[in-house]
Every structure is written in C-alpha cells, then in structure tokens.
Image (cartoon, rainbow, N blue to C red; front, side, top):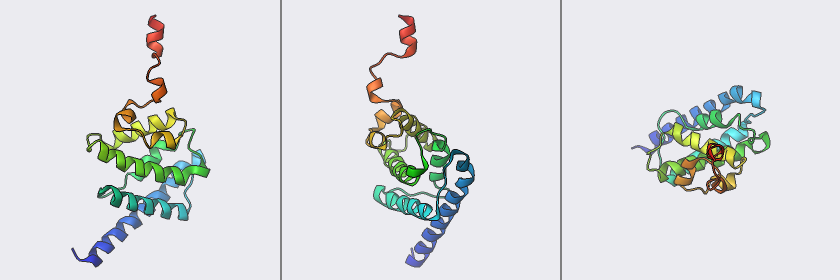
Length: 155
C-alpha cells in the first residue's frame, strides 16, 4: 500500500477518534468529567501506540467511547485522573483482547473491566496486571475465598 495513502487513512481515523472523544464530553459532563483537547490528543496517541504494540487493528469506531460510557458513572473515576485512567484502560483492553484470543466480545470485556475496576476501588495498579481468568471473575481476588452472602444465609 502506498505510504501516503496509509498516512491519510491513519490520519482520517485519528481525526474521527478525536471527534468521538470530544463528543463524549456531553455524556460525561453530568459526572463531572470532561476531556480537554490535549487529553483527547494524548488518548488518541496512546490508542495508536497500544494498537501498534499489541499488533491489533481497529476498523471503524474506536472502543474508547464504549470504555468512557461504561466507566463514566463509576464513583472511582475522578476528573484529576480521567485522562490517565482512560489511557490505562485502553492499554488494558487491547492487552486483554489478545490474552483471551478474542473469545470475549468488546462489551463482555468492558463489563469485566468495569467490575474489577469498581471492586478494586479504581485501583488501576490492581486491575491492569490481572490475568484474563482473574478479570473474568470480576471481583477482588481476596474476596474469592470469602463465602457469598447467599451461602452465609443458608448456614
């Protein structure tokens, strides 16, 4: 493929992502979250780096607006950490997609990421290094041995 055509295609996809991310501010504003132009650029750059680093390709719409929609109402997502969190979640998402060999849909993976993010009270240092099996459990590992409320009620 001609390198100028590749560059144009990449630039067009990046422009569309920037528009999608900026449009998310309307949805996230009620949660006190918004992305500045520099944050949008940083997230778009992180996405590009992560796609290259993981060997993944994304056609059409980016998954990042889905991540934003799924996480914006989390009590642990704060404006001060919003850009950093989205960058980390983007990297984690693509890494987990590789780890599960695409057996989970984007929506299933995002749901599991959100469950773990909330279970670890927004602790990205705890969520991002999880294995795919730990992520699929969707709860804190130290809670894995604790009996469920239903089990306690039965006793």
